[in-house]
Image (tube, rainbow, N blue to C red; front, side, top):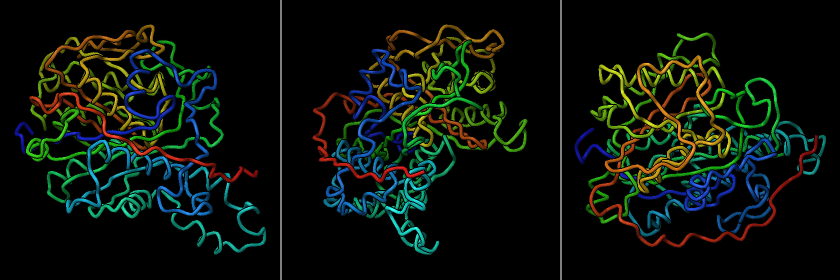
Length: 437
């Protein structure tokens, strides 16, 4: 995808993540090494219980039944379109939306069977009717209906890789001329209590340590993010502000070549990175930064680094030196279905700003990690990043669906800073039914 017609411009971004309500705050936090997980052992989202129902044409009682993940994504979707200076009501352009979210834990723990919602003797059919459109399937359709988008509205559900797979689907839809503008991303509420826990693959000390020798497991968080994409040639012709360019992407699955359904495979991850590089016709030696999946599980991180080493070596035919490896999960926790797009937003900002933010809680790679194919480093301080700047972003879902996206600087004057468009200021009020069991 080396030609102008085969690349995709990022023309709008938005996020609402632990410690940050917008990309500017997120960028400051990343560069300052802020830890939004802290003592809670969980990436808490301020105002999770609150929502501006009227801003989205909803009654209060309707909003109280709505999955908080839908609420979060509605907010970031509108913010992202505003950041792209796009008013859906003022354009004939076909705007698509590709998005995913996690399990509806709010419905599970706060609504179903709750006598404050329906009488205790209500039949199952009453619950089915009341909560019929609360699942992940309806997230993009709800956004399309509420914001007036008439392009494809596609739910993407691949666990933690959902939102980056959604970005890949959106980019391909643009290249196929199925839409003129595409909104992509995801949201996650991994816990309505916003508290951490231990056990299984979760960190024993409540600290996410991507790629570190002392890593003991994952930490989760709540939040969401979205990007607005456009064909690069169209964005240049229209004079859009361009944050960065997507030069290539790939999606695959590990298949059966792994120890178990929940265990990642080196071969699948290596293949998806190599495919993206081949798609863009990039030499891995030109990549300065890789935003890894970096979940903080010792086995998972070791597999990821080995896969990257294989992919870089297989494409270049020799070892590659100098790429910095990092993960936003050290700052925010794993944002489940939103994790991939949050990593992309971080990388887009790094490419634009010319700085690689530090990866938190890193002291050194595990001695068993083999990096002979590609000598990655992990920075613990903000690192200047001279032009030209190229990066890769990985996201891997439980069950083996992998995504990798390549990001590069915007051309010419299209990336010059501009005044940030005004964002809607929400008048949030509490829209929350208390957990009842």
